[in-house]
Length: 584
Figure 1 (cartoon, rainbow, N blue to C red):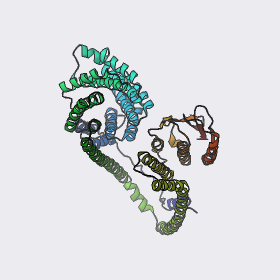
Figure 2: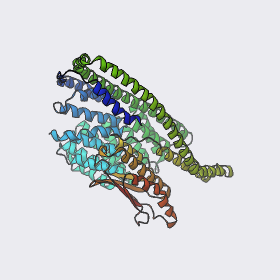
Figure 3: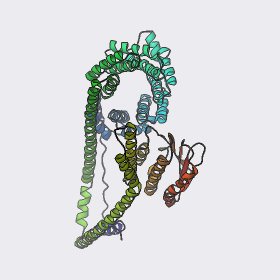
Figure 4: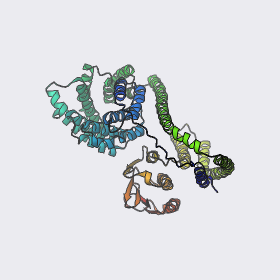
């Protein structure tokens, strides 16, 4: 008998034994809700000031406290503002998935808020998170949502600028140019420019848009980029915009890289000089990359070393900051749980005292015997469970060992033979040798990923998305649609694990057999079933690769265990297609 099956029986016995023998009616515990409005307002002022001063750790801690103290109905505005601020801090620190999760908590509150600024900020954050993770389709959706709000003229203009920025990321530079020109000539910023009524912070936004026009033209190899670069630089110098000056000089350096190397080097040096003053990651990284591109001889080696040291130091700082944020969150959650537990304990103290008075001597004897039996059984079943777990681990290690031997032995042998029989100083031989190593690494990583534990709690959708994103690269882009259109929490744990492993195996097989550059995975609720469709634009699989059917046999077997079905078409003219569905 497993311990999980035996525990309910023992709990039932314990419950029967400790029921008070008297018929006195228990008084329910009542926990009074405290009005924390004054404290919330005080902390909001402090947190907002820390946020403006870039003291994000201090601000983050206070915003967490505000959320804990707030009644989402009574203190809705402060509650939503705190969530939005935390989402922004997480975004600034590069925690895009956590930022998206935090911003999503705001969405149910938006229908109760009259001012559109809350929705505008939320949609903007979500759009920027999607852009940062290269999910540009969803980024565009939320950028358009922000634009369609009845917001202030400036927010409406900035939302339109965000749409143009997504088009830039997608490589649709002509659309981006059209929107930015509209904004800066006949739109909000253009009209204010004509009347000379741009405020300083609006002039900075105007300069960013004009600079982005230049970047778009440059990517189209159009010489019209130069006047926009110079205009943006002039504005930034006038307003002493130290934050964006390095980018202007770096843009000009890239523009003159082919036509005037000396001038390009001069602009690159100026960009790096300004970036060292500001000392922000993005600007300094771009400036150093520009310096390396424009340098020759010993200068290339010099700036490359500086670049490597800079990246290493930034990675260490980011890791430290990430750990600090995680510690704050953990300590806050722990304190919150301990305080709640203390309140409950105080509220139930009188009831517990009454129960103790009503217990008889026989109940204590019976309880002691039951506890002794329980401890004995737990000890026995724990030892048995450890033995079974060790056996399972041993079997799993044997399976992994066999897989490593079968999948990697041939590749390792070929790699060693190639290294022994070829001159690795030769560039083509070196590239081939690196390809061999990359293939071994990919297979090893795939085997490792197959044996990782899978979270099936509320983080399942995020982990599934992260696993799929792990297959993207320079040669393959994957579009995920509909992942959050239904609730994964209502789906059985075993089915979620099966979905995770099936998609993992399909992606592994397609990466091996297919040469697709674009793939799509669509999740859809179809009545009482979940339908998942995979398509790509790979070339038609030759008849000799009919072995794919055998490789997907394991996938089909997995799906059958959850009463699902699998269909695939390897001979499609438009690439490979496979879909499967299973009942909820």
